[in-house]
Image (cartoon, one colour):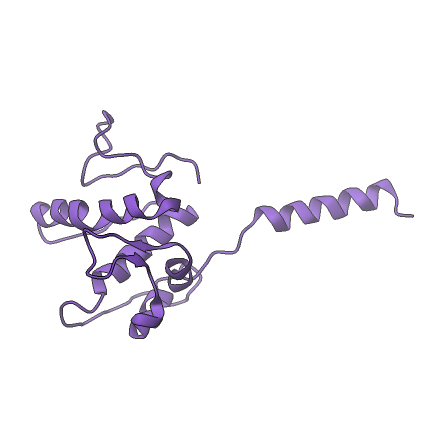
Length: 153
């Protein structure tokens, strides 16, 4: 029979293992959670990295535990680059990995990307919907170009 002290240590260790979920690679997160919206994708529905296997390594290099410090992605149009970046943002939001910032050349480009890409991703991906406040709220720090999470990660 185990002593109370041994049982307590085992329970504590079990609780720590359960509480600390492993951080997913960006591609694994996207395959598990990401939903492409009708507004932003010609083929809406579940994301599948298998459809764009050339993006897997790029997304995985963007993962927080990857030692890569800089990712350069030179590409043609319409091959999934924006969605690759959105998967990265979604992964950061959902896994509570900290604040992040996307930079675009102009404020108009930022507003357009927020409206046509980021907002639909948040709306269509259930795990993100409950974590990000709607930009229409009366919070002055929560505008179309600056989104706040609910703090519930």
